[in-house]
Image 1: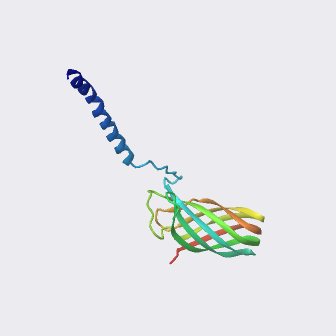
Image 2: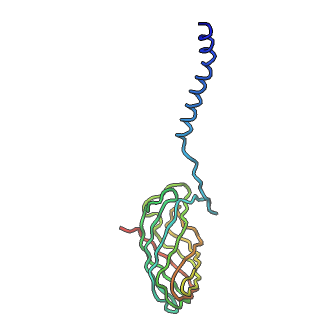
Image 3: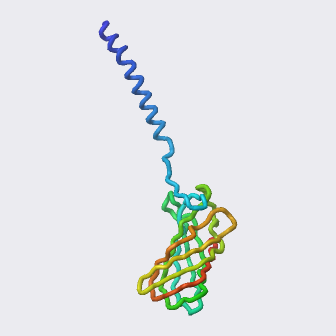
Length: 177
């Protein structure tokens, strides 16, 4: 009988510490997983991206205007959160035609929050493009609303067609219905 009591008393610290270790492990599993947040030069956090499909069209030597359909997607999920319609206007040397283009911008905010329609507004700057079959372009655009959410200043465009452009550019975004 003494042996059974001695074994039980010796096992008691092991059993209680195992329960504490299990409890600590359960609490740690409920903690939020740290999220990587990329910062830009203005101190904002990348909260997602804006993916724009730009319609094709012809450059008329001094400029062009093309419609854009854009979707904002958060960095955390893959579901589209907000839709925008817009117009891309170019003024300057714009020769040739494009069948379609795609523009993707990173979206930054001071915190991880986003409100419907926050990206609406006017963005202005410059564009340089070269396309023979498939081509690329670089955009330097700033603006938007007076709010704190903003688009990455420099973005890249991929497009199909035959085109050369060096223009002043404006993009107007309006929240879709």
